[in-house]
Picture 1: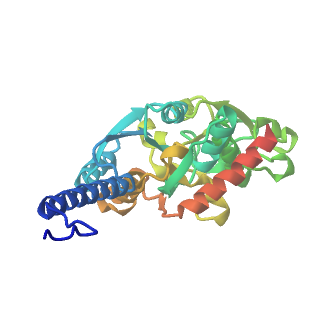
Picture 2 (picture 1 turned 180 degrees about the vertical axis):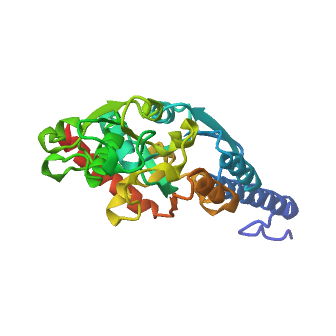
Length: 310
């Protein structure tokens, strides 16, 4: 008599089935590992690209130190030089640069509002006093009445320059002046001097023709001046000076890139860089590590104020 057929037939090729299951498990595990690794790469610094950073004054020696320090940190950097303030922001906005470092928050806010852009601060560098210089007078009190004094013609630096002149007793601003004051806000009947506005890169070279001029730090030594030559300046340590903190700026969609954070840290934490900044500034720079959220909040507030003025 033949044996009864089992209800469930035992597999005849168990070894092959096990091999298939093991192979599938290996493939699934490999896919999971690949996706996890890829996800981690998206959240880590991009060390493979060359980061183009626009500055005004690339010949300052500390930028060479910065490039070396960035390279040591695993980041290739190309410092791109500009001769005036009007160019680096559009270059970032259009993608020709990844970052720039030349401006304070007031200037950045005015650019964003005027051009419908969304560049954001991604790290603080320093705040610098803005000085009044003269080739003819060593004391503000010696500047004669009705003499002409020059200030930068860009909106943010003009307002700050006018505040310096007011603090020095040379002019009076209507309503006490604000970070948005311009020449129209000068109370000419109550002021000692006349004020003219010139491009920031030529106020220093105009010193032969005017009694005094507000000169941005980037152009002081290039004009053969020293920072100690200033006959008046503002106070960078004033808590109300936050809008004048100089920053690294980037497009909003790149602001959270870990490499961007690393690039800022290289600047802030490299002694050869910070020592170089102090040397170039004549020891006037106040180096800062202001939290980014405070910088962004200051930008938003200043943008709103700027929009209200337009």
